[in-house]
Amino acid sequence: MRDYWQLSGPFGLAVRAAIRIFQFIFSIVTIGLYAASLASWDPSRTNVKKTNWIFALVPAVISALTCAYHVFATVTHAAWSVWDFCLAVLWAALCGVSSSLVVSGEDGNNVTGDLRTRLAAGAWIAGVSMILWLLSAIHGCAYCCASRKTTRIAKQEGDKVDLEELPNRQQQNA
View (cartoon, rainbow, N blue to C red):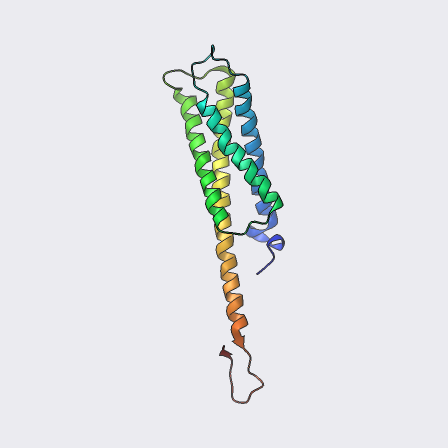
């Protein structure tokens, strides 16, 4: 099998690193946006509950930790594609919740001011992050399928025995 770090093209290090870097950046920005909202929370200005803002930190923190892990460990197992897909689902949920709050508020209470601005930015970032994590899941699955096919072909070619030196013999499979 080709070395994981030496691959080029669509499975190359540059593609994988670019995806993870953008995922990490968007995770940190999301943490900053929603943490700033929680830090400056004024219950007298809004009747909206904090739970949606706390939920926003969950996919952001998990994503940042996942990206940090990928910096230190070579991850080539197909199970990571499932994990990336789970994170894509979390980001999709966050995008939906944030967009819903921006458009219609919560329990008739509209979000206004800086809170609304940060929430709208967070909704867009969550949508982009969802796409990045979905792309990462598809990319990881495609890499695993391609590497398994390459390994299987190499193993089949390695099993062939070359009997050229024997008279009246052709290649046979062992």
